[in-house]
Image (cartoon, rainbow, N blue to C red):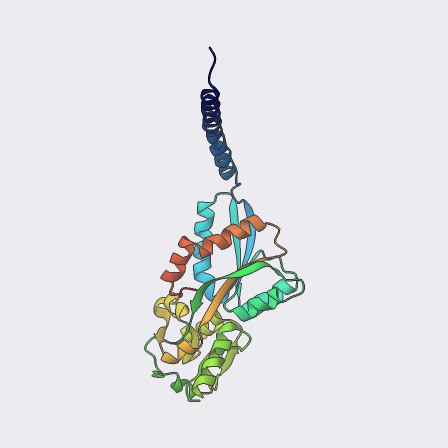
Length: 271
């Protein structure tokens, strides 16, 4: 039987459509399988990293390290807490750090601004914090305002200017015109807190989160001028890390939903 020229064209088009549909139906599952295999083949982080973190992060990062290890069997997170400026000195000197979490952007910039940069990529801001006056239980010196700290009869302890809490203190002194005749300047916020909780000082300038974490060992006196010195906390992978995959996974954990919930509960502000 002979087909007309028109009928022959229609038949050829129909055959082409059927062939294409068959090809699509057979390739779709294969593509899906390949994508699934690729996603599931991402290796889980393993091994050990050392996290250098600001002293004000001690309670939260200790908790985060423990929960991260529980969620990722085969990993170990070792922590090292100190003033951010001390940690920068250690990393610059070659200390074996994989992650650095600073209490301010200025100290992180010291590492990113090195040539070559000592931080891989761009650090991520993950929290904010402000200062609060810590006093011993019962507030024996009756400290009520930031201006009270200008009274030399009140023994006040502050952080050194190189430390983020000290830099924040200096900003507030400048904005208020109040100079604190501090009896000592400490290299970390935890040292300031220790002198107040032990009764060695009548008052100390620490972070809101430090007062919250200290429980009943100190009392907090808030002051409105603290809003003029908000510290932003960045975190980044140290470029010499021997386990960048695990370092990146921990940073993602801190900046993710779980990490942010722990930081919020401790009193940190959103980045």
